[in-house]
Image 1: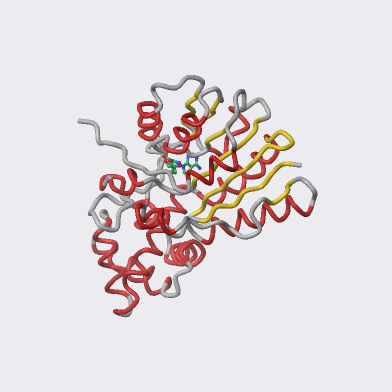
Image 2: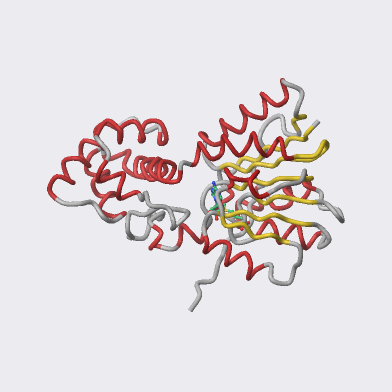
Length: 289
Ligand SMILES: C[S@@+](CC[C@H](N)C(=O)[O-])C[C@H]1O[C@@H](n2cnc3c(N)ncnc32)[C@H](O)[C@@H]1O
């Protein structure tokens, strides 16, 4: 039986407000996921066209099912870093809703969850070779420390990578709960939860080359916009948001972008009460000049 794809689009009202879907406009949803934002745009105006990207084949399948009643959606199973290979026209708006979806997190076999035991996988694109287990079991202690420090901003990075190396000498580390236990044993009692979260975040970023893809895609996205076209990015951790903030600032300085959000917009209280995923979300929007 298919697993129901439950993902509530974050800050959907704000996304529709900035992108303003009017008849004939063309949009790129760079992170289609379950199709939640695309559905909001289409239901506001079905006479728009959408290029929808996701590097996860299961997300593409789920989005197709959710959007079955709508025409003029191109489904593209690829990394958004390759946006220019697929979109050969200038567009009116581009959305990035970064990170992983609720579905990916909730599905234990994907290895993203802190709550459910699963294989140390963490690939968004299951066609990719590198998994979190490869990193944890094969990278040197120094490489692990760098990943945990740079992508997790974890102050106990060295202790944790040493503990991992010690453990894997005895036995391969294969599951998320094994890794969680190693982290928890390696560090002081009061920091356990935060450290586990940060190490999982760091591994996910490294497995999926998330920051490199984002850097590349944002520049290309700005080029793909028509004058007056809008770029909307929702990010969920400070490393992503820093990149977006910097690229937007550079765009404003060199006269290519007008910033529509001086400070990032956060989800309203009412949304936070209903959708815990919206917590920590930061939305930035800019317009091509
Ligand atoms: C937060 S979810 C998007 C949810 C979607 N906006 C919705 O409302 O259903 C992020 C999605 O982006 C995909 N994704 C993340 N990074 C990607 C990348 N570099 N290229 C393509 N897809 C990516 C993930 O696989 C995931 O399905």
